Image (cartoon, rainbow over the protein chains, first blue to last red):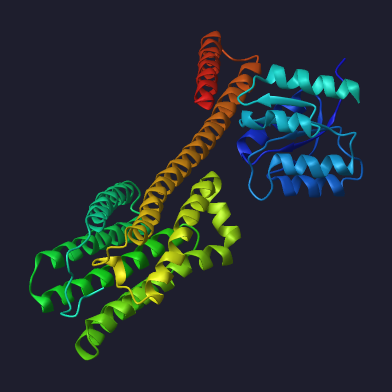
Length: 124
Length: 292
């Protein structure tokens, strides 16, 4: 049985956010917030009553990028799992170094995304 | 220095050959600047190219002065020589400073007008030697500015230079060797360019450090442009591959979600599978592009 996870989706591409949301809801997960840049993600994270289990994080975004946002979020709460879903393969090493749990390179098949979510949810 | 009759007496061979080398280096400098201008249309290369052209003409005038027996004409040619040299230095400095500072064109226009009109007035009122000294002094002031401006804006300079800063420091260092020589020549009352001097050591130190400086400056320009172009290309590659990745992600995700629908006909489902397959092929191509 799939463990239900509370997720924040962060991506500046609204279509991607919508599609990820649809598939994750279909899988039974709870989307607690959608952010379109790193700064919004931090604000949602800080204002959430119950912190999310997982954050799906893009990297190249306006205002604040995914790496900076992840660093700030993990300082705030190191238990949250950050899964990078980005087309910037060059930042993979840095993302994992600063504490991201997985790095998935766009474009990814939903099956890979769901496996990563499942692993994160189980470890929580 | 002009002789008692006001004209150059037998230019030393070393001076003549130094001028020829100057000419060759400056032609290369002009070629490099004009090439960069045509490929970038940047104003800095326009002023750099004008600077080199002025310097090319500046090199020719003492040679012309050597060829003429007309004292007045020789005087005028030497005034034009130092005037063009100082004006060229102004344009070259302006062009280079534009890498890290926004200089209003008005400043360049006013300075140029001042540097052209004043020596002309001085020539007709106080004589050509005073005019030559005036322009030589202006040139010296520009040389000092070459050190002062970067020192004041060191942070911006370092940002814009990147790894090319090493070539910039090398250029400044070689040019620094020339400054005391330039000052010594002026203090000794020797004429600009040492066109009638026989002091081989002084001639060597007057011409050799600027030659090295010109060459290093051209290398700096090429290195800088190559670095800027490379960084720009890498940024564009990252941006386009990122955007393409996002587009492919949307297509792949939308196809996957449509395929979940149980009511979908077999024909439609197979077509969606085809779209997904092509997305995977495109994503592999994208990975190859990222490696470039």
